[in-house]
Image 1 (cartoon, rainbow, N blue to C red):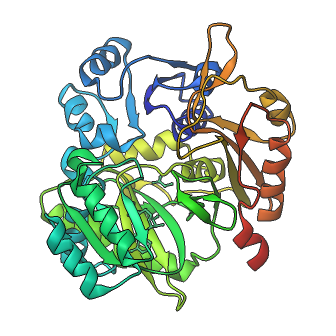
Image 2 (image 1 turned 180 degrees about the vertical axis):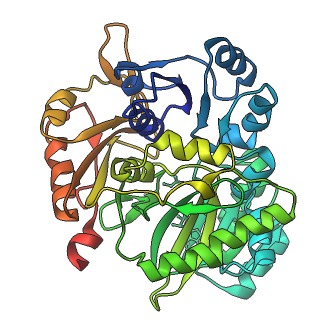
Length: 427
Ligand code: AMP
Ligand code: GLY
């Protein structure tokens, strides 16, 4: 099989890496890919925009691509699956109507309310004055969200009323473009976040191992929100009992409600949960894709060949598959970022030590990297590398990731030194 992977992050490098471990996969083409996918044996990059559906379909049809796997939300929300399927291609990722579950927070909220899925109380506004009087009535802390896709930057957890008001102004003044036509304001929840990614063929739903991301840029979970600074799996706070409840109270309800709306949702359904201090949970958001960096810790633990699962979703026969098999132990990934991220940062800095890190046992997934004209790996984004360790337990996996990191160098490297602090201190 030849597989085309759409995207250029650490998630897509991990997908390509996992796919290439299977005997069935002859080649992976990443669109547009990064420095890691360009240098991996069996993998090559195709320099197209992720929303250039026409050229992508021409290439895929000419090259006999058996499966297209879509990483990011933007092409899904633009209807990449609908487009490529209409050309006769097999595509893993929901259709445009299904991607609304991530592309519109107001739509997702109303789906959750309709389905009876536990979530924070919320209200939707189309203008600032009404939004602000709601904030005044509710009081802080309160959460202000731009409705649409905002690359993870559209959410403000406001600790004061003033902060909430300026977030409302920023959204309605167009900071997020058309993503800011609506504002969702919801109760602030306290607790630990868990990412539950599930595979679905529109009928059957199989959850993957639960993972925990580290969204804040600073140690001790301080500072700005980012795309994610590190992750580990399987997160122990998501117990078997909790996962059974998530299956019936969240995932099955969401898929059934989508089906009632005539939406045949096939792909990843990612539920971002807040586990509240009383051990209960609420859904913060849904995503219509694999998480990044969660995928980088889930896939190293997956024992079932990935392409078998993805094809079963596309062909709606997930229910015929045996239970997903996992390796025992744990995985952890630490994001090496460019100093300044999630704000401005430099690009083009030469990266050294990747080979030495790999020799020390870690898997290095590239995110914001590229090959320069001298064929050197250079930085090309805010989140640069995901240094991923595995082991019999969290201690080993985390220690391996940090040991590997010691070999990695580039000007302005920044990473959190406390990834996994919860599992290391709380057991
Ligand atoms: P979202 O894109 O909706 O997941 O929001 C991004 C991040 O904002 C989440 O991962 C949480 O850290 C935070 N967040 C979102 N909604 C809430 C909420 N209701 N209460 C507290 N934090 C939230
Ligand atoms: N790690 C968060 C996300 O993928 O949205």
